Length: 149
Image (cartoon, rainbow, N blue to C red):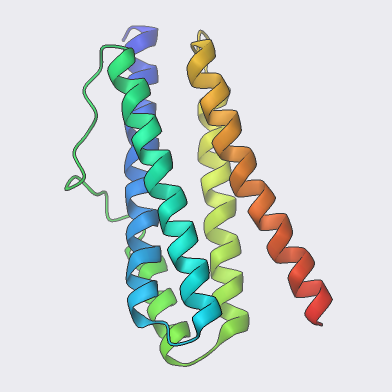
């Protein structure tokens, strides 16, 4: 397999992951009753939508074909079920822990792709920007949690 095909495959996998995370945030937004939680899910969902749009653009620039939104892997079905349970049970601590774990998994996927040899500079810059945005949000969550405790 050529390096560019491998990179396109991994970019498409990252794109699908962002579709799935956006879906989780969107469904959580529909279930949430707390205004702060709704705002959080709305912002995170919008962020992931933007990430997806940017990833699709990069895939096209590399002469690849972005996978459509309806091609989800199902890897995040468990996480979505947990989100729903924690929201319905009003269990904010476990919900925040699940969000934190979701962000950790996302960062791992970004780092995995950033380790690829011959990664185009534009892709590298985009991935670092998106990964750092997720990481920054994680740190803000952690600081807020420590402040509340």
